[in-house]
Length: 185
Image (cartoon, rainbow, N blue to C red):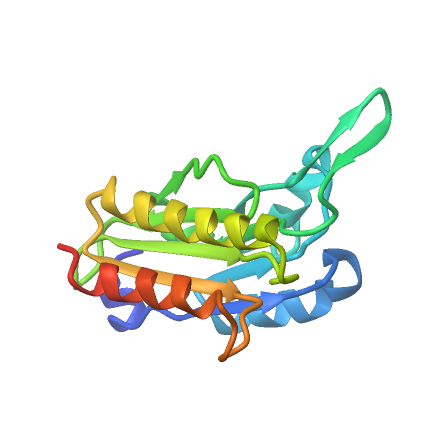
């Protein structure tokens, strides 16, 4: 597929599904309306991540999980899992990025009208008012910034669950991320 075939309009949507299994119909509907679907909180264990590529016959997926299985015991945070589903016809234009972060999934759409686009599906941790959650939040924003700075994309789209109230102390992290990337490239 080339950009002329999608009328030079790429549609990206985001959905916090809070478990993929009961949300499969909604995800399938989003796939029918969009070229790319960013998911948060799919709640799939690492060995089940391939299920995302089976939700729609026309879509492939990349995803992350914040959990591992250790001697048949689930270990890790029970939240933060992200994924990106993209139409199969775009697969030749997609480069999957290994984010190294359990709360981020990313792809670069390499051949767009405006140049390469980095698309990040993000789940930022909730501000519980403690230093640990603030550090995690800032580290996730910094990881997004580093992903963009380290690639050749000229556009950045971050879609997801920011878990950030307007008057939260963590709002500053989001504003810094946005402002620093506005001037990039």
